[in-house]
Image (cartoon, rainbow, N blue to C red; front, side, top):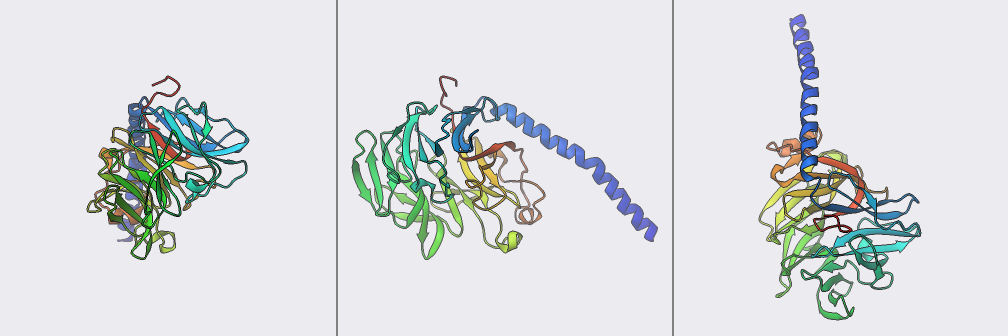
Length: 348
């Protein structure tokens, strides 16, 4: 009996050893195919450490090729690129050399700069800490800024405040929807912090999108869905604190869909490609570690492959047994990446 059991165990190990490499090779082949598919689809702009050890803005193709340092400024720390709707301009924050970029509060830090997409002709729009969490209006002529007093709508040309509205508990990560009708942000609501909310700009009506440990919301191109980072309750890993995953939710909060998760990593920086076909994110081994450690590996996958789970992730797979396990293209470390299809320096 014992010999039969031992024989079965050895056979199972042999089968596993034989089958695992082909499975891994197949996944590598799928990732390579995806890399070729996205290679010419615009540019990813992101913050990372430059040669001098300070934060610079970089750009590369979505497959990681044609990398270039856009800012090359050893006397400053630069991060948080946000491209204008027409792709011609870019906003980002510039801080004094040696500043520690805060994962949660970076929108309040440093000066807000406006530049061309390739970071040429940078102009400071305000002093240190002014125009916080600046978000583009759909036509690119105004900015929505989140202050302690409320949400200010600012005319970009004159820097004048055109209107104000209550922030309704939003305390970071304010973004204006592409159709101009909504704001989303991370808020204190119903006695809970880290709640994602949506505000109707015309009526001021607020609705909760997702509760409990959510942050970094951003709009999908359709203005009807929001992509965000979420750490759901009840995860057994990480000392029962669980890991942050990427989710997509409808603006009314009725639809909730896992996009990507992996036990052992925290997924941030979620943004859809301009055509909504792909999703870009970062994968940090420690919660909030990206900005303090030079960023975290960036990843790109197809939205057609959601939900996808990376690695072994037995706890997460038990909760989502129908994961599609799509391929992921892994890029170098970056932070707060932004994907644009606009030409960069005249190169499409």
